[in-house]
Length: 451
Ligand SMILES: *Cc1c(COP(=O)(O)O)cnc(C)c1O
Image (cartoon, rainbow, N blue to C red; front, side, top):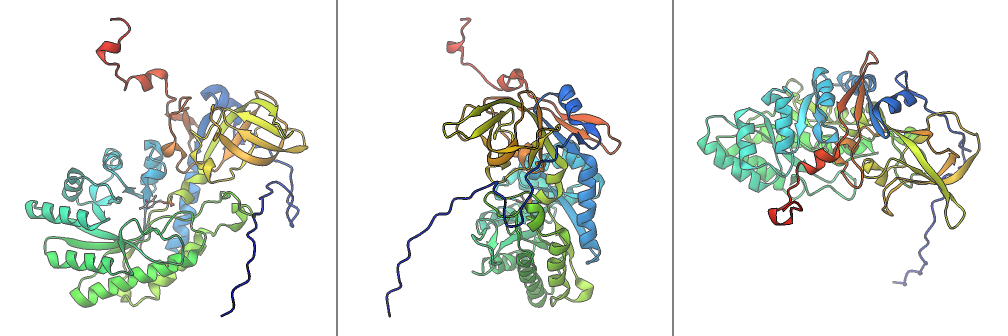
């Protein structure tokens, strides 16, 4: 065999901001109002920065998603992914709209119970469920999605001593054509672990297998991957029926639908490239209705969509602190929003615009946060108009994950307000104070300065 010809590797710099072949416009539309409330009023009243959530957008998105699925499949149930945004006010909106709760820790489980969610409407996912968590979930008839064999054995042990029959599903990971595979959660389909776990549950006698679960990843741009995943779960459902004459009640396809944010390095904006709810619904429901499952036994389709439902409903308002020139002459603008409260700036090119009309001229700009930390970059390269100190900016589509993954670092976390459907504004999480931080601290007696 002839030796393949060596070609040197080539690294291409991403030139963000340059006009592409579609001649994308560089002028920026200011966002002056959110749900009819002036941005300036919100900042004057609740401080800068401030997170703003729109109840109207939350409801609109959920109803779009529901419509996409319920028009294609008879039995659909949404469950709100708590970790995506577990502010109680937000969870309550979803629960009132009919969503169950999907939780991944004991803390989130207790939060759902406190929010009034019925135990049998809580889906308990995740690799970390303590024995006490599991006991509680079994008592409350919650749907426990097993992550690994050790968890299954703990549940078997508990079932021996408890009256209630645990309601179980297993999480299954598989090859759907998406790489790298998310094979760290649940039981693998291809290597037989999933079938092995299902068989052990069925043979046990004290456990009830109610469903099959997968969550193939997040920000999945290819609806076809969901089609493959659904077919594989449907095949397992058919095999269980054949071997044990047992029908599972539901198939849970998890979350992972992309929001319209733009990933770093993407050539086109997410608004142009992200699949719609209809695209995902088409792939999933086609795979279900075309499977070998008897039509009268079709399982309920559960969806745990997080990001795609709430990203659009969140905006982060802030203020320009300063402008300066970097060593290479490039302009930089410093704002009061840092990566500590905008965690998603590590992977998104966030949509960031002025909150008032500015000059039409834009310049290649780096937008930094306020932290004394080199990694605090909100946008590395953006065509941005000159904004003066004290002027306001709006960052859109930040409703998912930021209000749960944020951290207290250098500055304190700000207010979160909700604009309800009647345009009333409510603080739904107060800004932190120095006391709310130091209350948790303890200085040992010998270090106490007053001694
Ligand atoms: C995080 C998570 C979700 C929500 O994922 P999104 O990508 O935000 O839709 C759903 N199910 C499970 C098990 C999760 O861990």
